[in-house]
Image 1 (cartoon, rainbow, N blue to C red):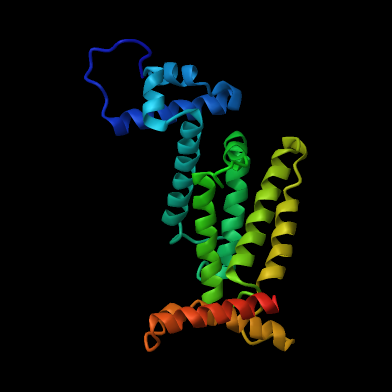
Image 2: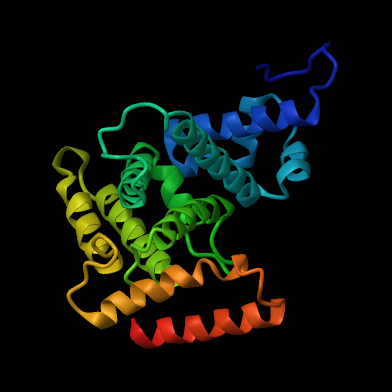
Length: 249
């Protein structure tokens, strides 16, 4: 990368965008959030400051893009390693996959503390794009548990509980002195959350209400596949099931 005029033709937008994001990431790792200024990023990437505004809107847009790329890289790495043996148990078990996703989330946050704090900051428009990608992945794991008949609460409630708990654990660990960090806190919280939202093997419940709730959640995941019913009938059934789930949980 150069920091001055170049005789080379202008870089295509995608390459320029990647260069700016890479520069922002380097500055963030070297000096924290305060080091990521528009001027510093422009100098590091070898572009003019207006280029950053044209590509990302403003510095917040750049930071959102940086965080989103980091999350995408994490998800792609996890996707590529699914075929490899795992120390987290049977990857075909949706509950074990949920545990593995939690641990990956915590590891990502601890490896990228400044970035994690930036992408976690509350904002008027809702979660950052990077945080939304993480929530979407979590929803996929929750849906897999529901399809397997393993959820003890609704998909929405399970997602809210696990997201809040995982998010809180990462921020709590980031706030601790690295040499005194209590990593056991993560596993303790994980197992507590799992016990709240996941059932044992389907059909093994001692209490009928719990078994009924798990069954309703399971059926709720199948409503869209009930082709003999009309769209209106499926919509009504989904509403009845959702109301019953909310009543029981």
